Amino acid sequence: MNIQGLDYNTQRQALLLPEYGREIQKMIDHAVGLPNREERLRCAKTIVKLMETKVPQIRENANYQQTLWDHLYLMSGKQLDIDWPYDVGEAERIHAKPSPMARPATSIGLRHYGRLVEELWEQLKTMPEGKERDELTRQTANQMKRDLVLWGHGSIDDEKVADDLARYTDGKIQLDLNTFSFERFVPADEMVATGKKKKGKR
Image (cartoon, rainbow, N blue to C red; front, top):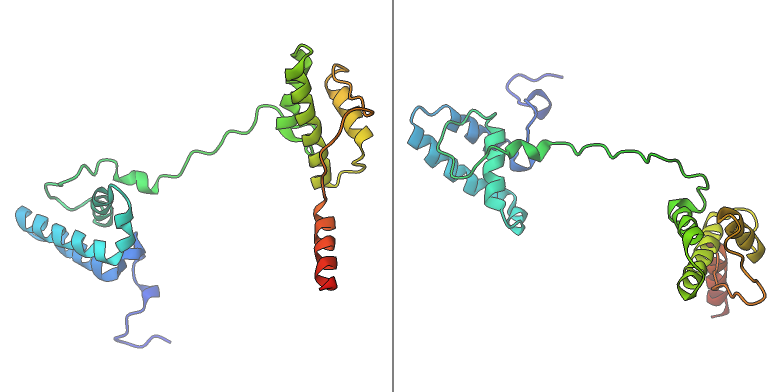
């Protein structure tokens, strides 16, 4: 129903920066139409002070005054002809969209292990024997088992980790399961079940 004399927001022009409200936008439109340049500048300074009260959290930014004048410039449709106290040449960066991220050039062959583990395999292939390689082997093997636990990917026994580690390092890394000790990993469902049991005993 359209009642004569009533002004609905849905019938109004959309606001570029709605956080400042329609009254601020009307003031800016008024300032643009003022005939005197100095008068337009005085009006603009007053509007910026009002804008600051509308969005007080903007003061948390170190350069908030620059931001306010950038906003004023944009809300005026770049039509406000004044001696700008701040450089508004980069104001449009506010609405600039970030460039899309480039997709990886190579695909991840084993998603449950991920690219990080694949990179660790490649590093282990070229490392000489010694304490440094032994430590990286320990960290890699534990990360592999952690990944299998989190993904619930088939068997998560120690033999699978040892087999995968040997396979994907071209046989360079062979875990001796008689001496190698994995860290203790508790699957999420076991943790939830354990928590419920403890609560039930109380």
